[in-house]
Image 1 (cartoon, rainbow, N blue to C red):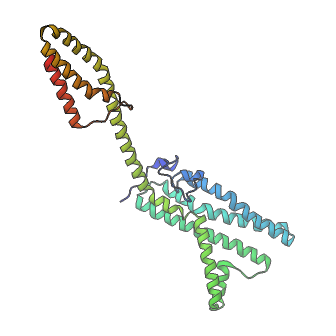
Image 2: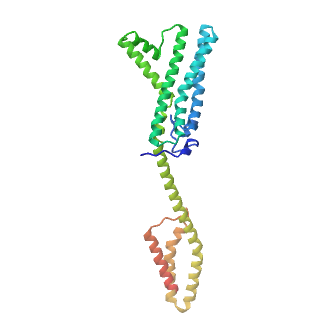
Image 3: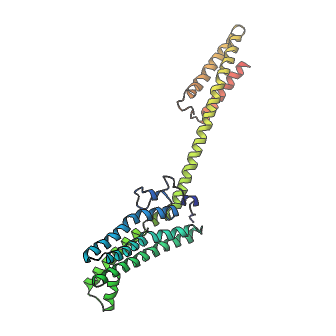
Length: 294
């Protein structure tokens, strides 16, 4: 079963390969774990900055239309509050759930329930604001209240029922998106992205460790080579007069050894790649040279 991602991800920006985002637009709140506090309050502030003034604008238009700023203000604060509930209630309630450090299966179910409850709360608040406005205008209720009134008066005509149902589905879709339903996919998929991130980090750490070990080995070898070379040349010099055949063999062995080692020391990265077979050949050549020297 999937485990919950690290709790520190709720208050700190996520790694780039873990942060997907609700809409995938790279908005500043999408860099945080979905339905965490950091995510929820940033998202609420951002969307409320658009939704609340829009509700207030509707109230202003109403007040100008009826020439009554009092009515306009009454409509404005109800519509603005309904929009705020729509964009913030579900995500903030889900953030409260996440802070409880529950089992992943329990938390997942409660987060989904929180988003659903938030959508219903926004739908209810929006219906209240619409009914309030319709009553002020002396109009028949629209939206959810209007659909219920139609059924109360009897079975409505099919075309009216289809029209109202389509309008209701559109409203539900809008409230679901504004209430954070799209973020559920990001939230539910986050444990998998954390596991893949950890695997990539492990592979990178292993790769860096291997590179560092090879770099140190190459550096050590580069430091040892001059001493080895000078000692071997001194041995050749001492054997030229007394044992020229052995001296010639030592020069040949030294040439073979240098052909194997010099390309490795010149490797541009400083960490030459090699195989086990090549290492054995290098050791064999070195031992042959040492056998001639001693």
